[in-house]
Length: 277
Image (tube, rainbow, N blue to C red; front, side, top):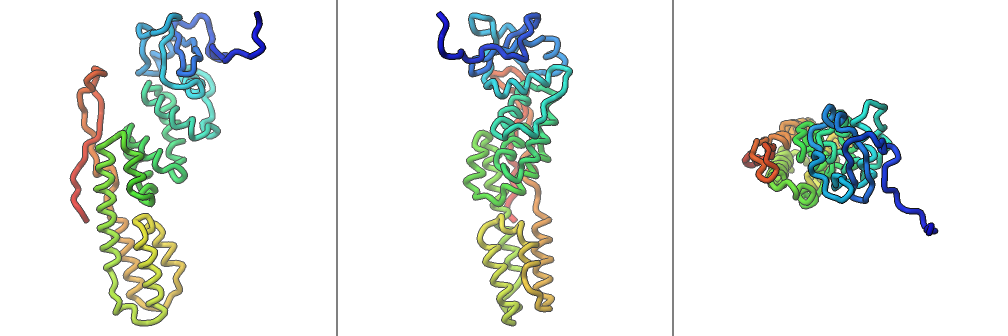
C-alpha cells in the first residue's frame, strides 16, 4: 500500500554512491555513503566502520543532516560551499563538527566565518575560540564580549570552567583599570561650567559598565572643546590605560593532558593568576 504522506529523506541525494565503503547516519536519520579514502586524506577524526552501531552497518553521528550536508562536501575534491550564506545557527554546529572530526579543508573557512560574526555573536565566537584554542579569535571576541554583563559571558563559557573562571579575573582587572582611568582627574580641574558638564558626562557614561570604555573615543569627540588641557590629558591617560590591558588569552595557557576515556592526548586551558590592576 502506498502512503499518502511523503516519507522523510533517508539517504542523502548527494552522497549516495553505492561504491562507497562507509556509511554514516545523521542524528535525524539520513544516511551518507562516503569513500574512506577521501576521509583518510582530508580528515583525522571520524570513527571507523568498526564503530557501526545499527542493523544497516551505519556509523551513527550526533550531528543533524543540515550540518553533515555541508561537512561531507569538504572531503571531496569539488567546489566548496559558500559559508557566507549559511545561517549562524548552522554555522556554529558545523564549525564544531569540523573541529571534532578534524576536517582540515573546512577548518580555516569556518574559522573565518566565525570571526566575521564576532560583532553580532561575541559570546558564541568567544566560546568557539576558547574551545578550540584559537587565541586570535578568542582575543578578538573578548574585546566585544567585555561589553556584556559578566554573568552572560560566564554562562557562555560554562562548558570550559577554567575559561569561565579566567573571565571573572579578566573582568575584575577591567574594573580596576576603569577605576584607575576615572581617577585621572579631580573635580578641581572641572571648575569651569562647560568643563564641569563634560566631566560629569564622561563619568556617568564610563561608570555605567566596563564595556562603555570602548566608546570613550566617540564620547570625548562628542563633547564640546573648552580649551582645557586637563581634559585632553585625561583622555590621553584613559586611552593609555585601556590600550595597556592584557589580552584575555594571557589569562589562560594551554596544557596537554591525557584524555582518559578518549585514550589520546588533548589540549585544555588552565587559568593563570594575573592578579588585579
